Image (cartoon, rainbow, N blue to C red; front, side, top):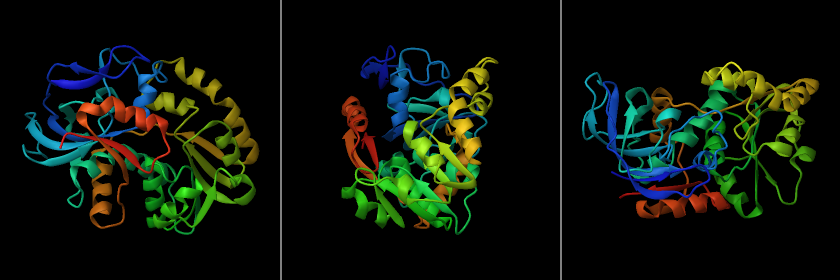
Length: 331
């Protein structure tokens, strides 16, 4: 089976012949039509998570996909061959940069009827990230103030739409060339990150979704109201994350040390910080499907590459600067 894999951390993404996926009793074999390209793919390639996510080489990259069901395991009841589906496979079963992938039934959902395969393939990881940040963790309520960093990007463009649907007042950071674009998604306040300092302009926010980490996260803590929450997807990971992942007993201590600075600053300000490493969920994807087909959410696809140019697609994503998601398509 044709796939794009790495043979070592920091190595190039290369076309590789991989074995056909094994299909367990509760698995669904999917022919991949389109796969989103995510920052997580690059972080895995460079080994940023190698102490946490233990992968064997060669490793096929790719963390979300849309496609057609080829075959189902004996205990699968929710899907049949021919179904159009999409998913973010769980962390230990990634590999959507391939012709086929075996996915656990509970991680899979019917593809939104209103989307084509390319659009659907762009959505699972960023859609679930936005859902888990704003709904599962953030519990955003009508009238609350939410700051979403990098609003023109893959996560940000979906999170803006979801936050507005939840009734929030939304601010975002973006370049001046993307100001009109993020306003079209529903943003109320646009901060030009090149010429404006969001810390000087925003105050009393209930939630910040931080996609950058570092100094950006530190400044984000200072615009929160007392009791407000910053949710970061760029780190630093915390001890709660280690426990959720079931890591070895030493890792919660290690990650507690790594996140001690930001947690200490948050406590001093009377706010909180949580690290989010999104998890696979077919149930949540079904809710996202409903919002898409109801016209509430629409994915933003910036560039599309043919499957044969997957390494080039990863490079384009790494360079950044585009709107929405980079997608590879076999269609």
